[in-house]
Structures are given as C-alpha cells and as structure tokens.
Length: 126
Image 1 (cartoon, one colour):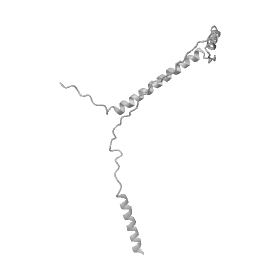
Image 2 (cartoon, rainbow, N blue to C red):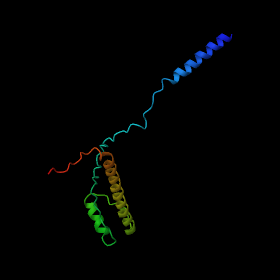
Image 3 (cartoon, helix red, strand yellow):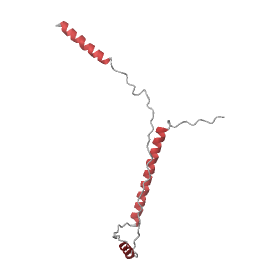
Image 4 (cartoon, helix red, strand yellow):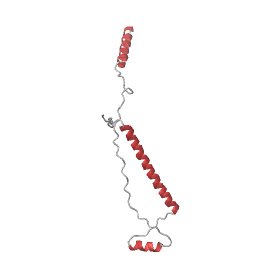
C-alpha cells in the first residue's frame, strides 16, 4: 500500500511540474505596435434643400394667400415669433460649431496617428 501511494504522489508531482514547463513568455508590453494610418475620409458638406421663406404680415396676408392659391399651393402657416427665429439661427450656429469641432478632432487624430507615416523632408543639399 505504501508503495502505491508513493507511485501516485510521484506521478501527480511529475504531471504538475511538466504542466508548468510549457508556459511561454508573453511579450505584451515589450513589443511596440506601429501606428497604422486611420484612412478616415473627411466628412462631406451637407447639401441642404433650398427653402423659400415667405414673410406674412397683417398687411400682406390676403395678397400672399391669393398668390399661393393661384399657384396651386395650399396656404398653410407655420408661425414663428422673431425671438423663435433668433433661436433657430442660434441652433444652426451651434450645429456648425459642433461640426467644425468634430472635423478638428478628426484632423488631430489623423495628425497624431499618421505623423510618423509621412515621409520626412530632407534638408536641401548645398
């Protein structure tokens, strides 16, 4: 019985020790990965549809409605106060600013990632 226990222990120890011998060293932090070009296209400008604004006041309302009806257009009003119109203008300005900001961020990422990939300019030979 003592002999069988000894054999089992020797076999288990040899399995444990040989299992650890096959571990390879990982090179996770020792090899630097080169930057790859981003290949991000610049966003294309939006092509907006042309909108025709008609200013209707109490003085010209009847005339405008007659012209619209004569042109076969169903006259429907969507009203804005002058303050609301200013808010629309501010919103569009905010949209333009956000788009510019996004383009600038893309440019900075591109410059960071692709700076090393650009051919170095050599100094002129004398």
